[in-house]
Image 1 (cartoon, chains in turn blue, brown, purple):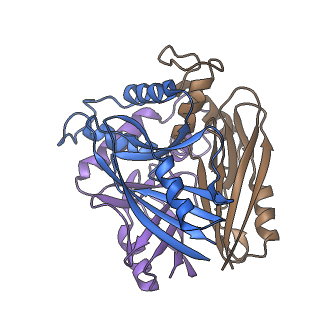
Image 2: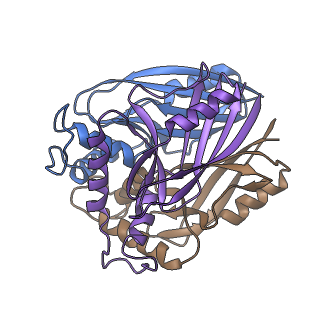
Length: 139
Length: 139
Length: 139
């Protein structure tokens, strides 16, 4: 049993999902590990890691619209607004969606379902550079 | 240190929780691992894995009622409705609840609290067969 | 590769966040593990583990206000109220926020971002003692 780690950076283009399945899968395949566990951790409190449908882009637009209605920018409920009306909503979205994901590795591949992709979910209105730490163990 | 993997299938009976603690616990016990970490991953974007109270069945009904009110079937906000009015709500519910769980193993048992059970949370109105990949490491 | 486990107890003071980064980081550092994966699991269905901003305390107040508005105490929707009007809302909050977190360990430290802290998120109105099981693997 052995382990490997790396940190990847992804540039988002504002709110919504940025697919990162490809870069993660390539790093896993390059490790030579056939059976194991991949853990991804995002080093931010205003972006998340989501597993979502990778087929119809409307799913991503609908999810963003739902979150925007659930957690309203500039809601007078919020006291913390040092970085603007989307600041505290980003933290709330981050609390309601995952900071970390673990995916088993089987036959040298991520054991994702047919319709599953891994995404950075950006919660700020402007694009950001987001760091994702990967940890892989197995043999 | 060693690892073991398997894939279990569970048939749900429509929206709500299906307890899967028993089958997971039996597989862990059969592995002979005394101390370790069990990770479960559901290979779908319209069902989740939840740890919830295992005592009063009313908790499960209340949770389903809450989710049904929070994410309304047929909401005109949603563009993606290729599989019906419960299609996009299922993806939203899946974003708000876990795709993956990890539970430490102590003394050859899952280290769950007294009132905790592990459940498949079905988000489609019709029952489905759901695949859960398990990864166990330890010694 | 080796592993280590422990169980820590934290007393919360009612709803809101209690930071637990320090005790977890000290336990990780005491283990001598330089590269690895730390998993934390909370043994309750009315409290969660959150990664949140550790800078402005207003973030924590705003998050609590948001959750209190999203999941109302005493909501007539809820049937389960054996422990009072905050009983079922606590289970719903627990379904919408994590029961478990995994954080990579790099250079003998938790690979948290600059603004990230680990918190117990209490969902009951009264303070409780909460058990968090830690599992660490690495070398």
